[in-house]
Length: 214
Image (cartoon, rainbow, N blue to C red; front, side, top):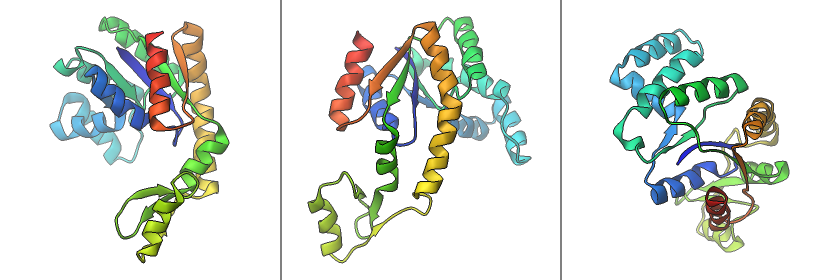
């Protein structure tokens, strides 16, 4: 099963990817993780990436695709992979398709974890961390008993500085601008699956499993 996973911040794609990885015995391949690993290992493309990043510039698509090629040549992708964080543009999607065809590893699906904007805002702006236990909570979705457990024990529900409506609204707007062409690309190719990602983790995962088996 070879998958590109698409989803806005707060869509839960990371959580769902972890469950799918375990069930299908396939790795989640994050471009950020790959870049860091390639730099640490000193591969050809890792050295190029380091030079670019040290100069304060964005790593080119050519270098990222080279790192993806190296990663997909490793033994643990024999059963497939979940690619997360790439492609972000239609051109990247086209370049990735060429690369995967060359490697005889064509994509099975692009999966969009679809959540309404209002739900995403609540998921992200409502995030809190208990100052005593470090437990992650949400003022909109966590049971009141769990929120009270923290505050009744003398703890505080702490929000991250960047978890505010303006910052998150900007992040979601950028995501929409970048991702809509990518979604359209895969829809046109006929391998886009859209999964309703609103609900409990288990409910969403059940929908995801149904979608990939359809």
